[in-house]
Image 1 (cartoon, one colour):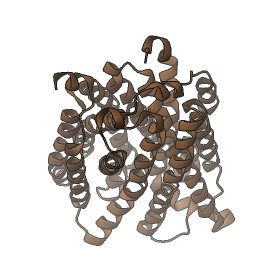
Image 2 (cartoon, rainbow, N blue to C red):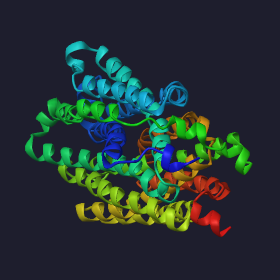
Image 3 (cartoon, rainbow, N blue to C red):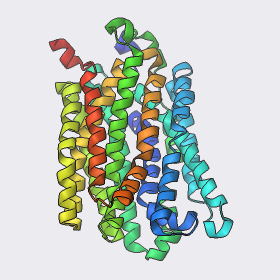
Image 4 (cartoon, one colour):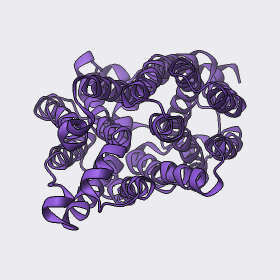
Length: 423
């Protein structure tokens, strides 16, 4: 393929347009997570605080069940009709769901309809996010020069973590400005509404993108060229993504953990999300750059191995010294390896997949991994803490899953041009 003639130029505006979809979807996910304590008291039937929280996190988990369906429907749509219309569809659905969530009446006003409506909206959002990742990542891979794919695709993860950072800042500011009662009654609704403000701009920006489906159609099928089985790659991708998403949502649970387990004030707990997001934005981009320079496998394996080694000592330290300073140290430090590893893994998986079915073949294992393990991660952590009364339970669970993911990473082929040239 003559890249100069056929590969669209990736502009800063194009990167922003693709990134906004991820930012909106993940901003809402994080807002729902970090405001779980407040939402539980408004939308769900009154009961003991632990039960209310688990109902909220259960809704959070069930919203992930529609991700695989969205991956199949929108992912295949992206392979047949184009990356651009698929990205417009997923963004429109996500924007609608985000705005509607902020307007759900409380349980006190409409009874059981409140949690049911919230669940339906979470499932619509899950459908949209499930279909977002495949077409948007395929678009970036098909636009980016091969030697810079790691850096370019890492923008996907950086925008996700930027959303986490913004969500933490919004939560911190609102917790400082509002009373506990106001934060519970409507503060979380304001936070969700802020995310909906970018919808019109995001739709306009995506409508101006150039289509890249012709790039995939012109590329040689990776299975024929490299002898790789799509089924094997999908399985390895599912395991890697499952591992990474458990780590991500497990670390994002530190906000709730700080409030419920350590007894820190709400505003101080939000600083964990801010510091996690700050480190993740920086080191997602760094992980992509490193994978272009040194290869996908060394970076993904190195990052997740460091995370596995650091989780238990970090939680021991956090419980021995449950202060805001320790919380910030743990959040920032653990975020670094967790940001570096997954960025390289997804770039490698995307490069290895058959180009003509890249959107769906990436979206489906990604959505399944996130739906099965990511959506349930915080619920399982909350249940383990309640069932075992062991404050180190989150570290044990996340470490075990990360070790399984490392096994799959070791079995992946190396796809970085710099490493393949040396080979």
